[in-house]
Length: 239
Length: 239
Image (tube, rainbow over the protein chains, first blue to last red):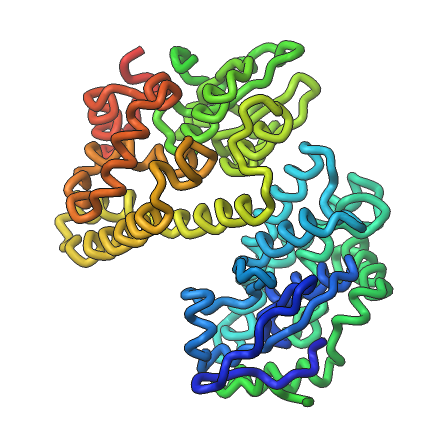
C-alpha cells in the first residue's frame, strides 16, 4: 500500500480508479493522510494509493483537488473528497462494516469536540522542532504542550477507559494517533512523563494491528524528517 | 426566544433544562450562535435560550463549558455540546424531522468541504472592519474577499441551483448565512456587486421564514456593533 514512488509535476496521471475500489492520494509520511490510511486499514476497505510529491505537485492532481492537499479520496465515479476528518467520516458512512464513529449522536458530538480540541495541539508538533532548529527557547511551548497532555490524561482518568471512546479503539483514537507515533522523531517523548494514562494509551495503541500495519520504523521517520527539515523532503525515502 | 437579558459573572444559574426541551446558551448578535438559532428554528425544536455576557462570563457557565463559548447546547440530562457546526449536526441527528444535512455520504462530505472553505472566509468580516477602524489600507483584504465570493458564485453557477445544496435550503446555507446577513453592517455589501448569483442567493435566503424569524433589524445590528467596536459591547441592546 505505501510502497509506491510519488508522482510529481510533469508526470502522467494514474489510470482510472477500479470499480469497487477507492483511491487515496497520500504522502507516505504525512500525519493527516495517516489518519485516512488508518481508517482504510481498520475497516478493510479495498483501495489503491497514489503518493504525491507535495513540493512539486502534478498538474493532473491540482485539477482533481485545486487545494492540492493530501489526503484526498477519489471514487470510481470520480467523486473527490478531502480534509482528513471529512475523508474518514465519509469512509465510515459508506463502508458500514466495523463502524468507528459511535451511533449515538451525543457520543459522536463528544468525539467531534475532542477532535476540535486536538486541532489546537497539532501545531505544537511543528512549532517545537522548528523553534529548536532555529535555536529558540522552546521551554514555554513545551510547557503548554505538557499542559494539553494533562487534559487528555484527565479525560482518560475520568472515563476509566483504555481508549478515548471506551475500551475499544474508535475514530477519535485514530484521529490523534499519527502525531503520537511521531513523538520520538519530534524529540517530545519526555512530554508524556507526567501523564501516565496517556502514556498507557500510546502503548495500547501500539499493539493495535492497524497501527502496526501503517507504521514506519523510527529510523525511516528520522531519515525522512531530516530531509524535510533541510527543505528537501525525500518523499520516497526507503523505497 | 432572543428576548432575554444576558447572564453575567455573579449571576445565579438558570434553572434546569425542562424535560423534552433543549437549551441554547447564546449571545443575541453572535454569528456562530446564529447558526444554531437558525437550525433550532428551521426544525421547530422546542428550546429555551440563555444569553451570556461574553465579556464577563458567569462562573456557572464556565463550569458547564470551560471554554466559555457560545453556542453551547445543554440537554435535560445535562449533556453539553459546543462548537457551532457540532451543535447543528447534533440537532439534525437527534431531531429527525426536516433533515438539513443530505443523507448521501458524498453530498454530506461536499457540505463539510464547503464549510471548511467558508471557515477561511469568516476572518475577513472581522479583519476588514477592524483595519478600517484603525485607518489601515484594506484594499488587499477586500480584493481577497471578492475573490472568495467569485468562487462561491461559480459554485452556484455550476450547480445551476438557488441554494448551495440544491433548490431547497440545506445545512450549508444556514452555516454561511449569518455573515451575509451582517454584510451591510460590516460595510461590505458592495463586495457582492461582481457576483450576481451569490447576490441572488442572499435575496432568496432573506425570504426564508427561518431567516426572517431569527434576523435583527439593520439598525439594531449597527447599534450593537458600534458598542462592540468601542470595546463595550451592549449585549442587551434593544431589550
